[in-house]
Image 1 (cartoon, helix red, strand yellow):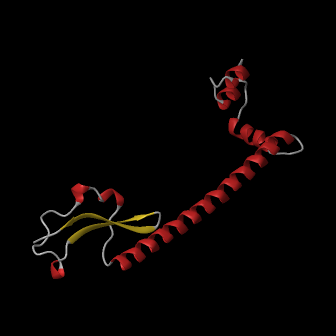
Image 2: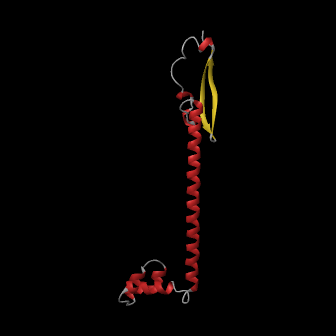
Image 3: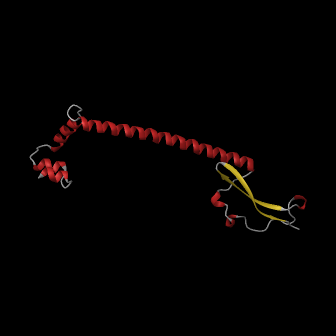
Length: 142
C-alpha cells in the first residue's frame, strides 16, 4: 500500500518509509542515492544522469555564446549610433519618436533660410544600423 501511495504521489518517500518501519528515512535516502549513482548497480539511471549533464553543459555553452553575440551586437549598434550622431551633427531620433505629433511646434523662422531658399524639416532615424534621413516638409517663405 505504501509503495502505491508513493508511486501515485499521494505520499512522500519519507512517509512511506516511516509507515514501513524505516527508523531513519534520511539515512535511507542517502543509501538510495548511492545505489542510484553506482553504475554497476544501476547503469540505466547513471546513463540518464550523464546524458542530462551533457545537455545542461551544452545549453550552458550555447547560452554563454548567445550572451557574447548579444553583447557584440549591442556594442556594434552603439558604435553605429555614435557614428550617426557624429555624422548627423546632433542627436538622432528613434523610430518610435518620429511621428508627426513629435515634430517641433511652431512655424519655421520668417524669410526662409540663407539667401531666401526654402526651409526643409528633416527627420533622421537609425534603421538596420544605418542612419536614414527624409524630408518631412518644405516651405517657401516670403
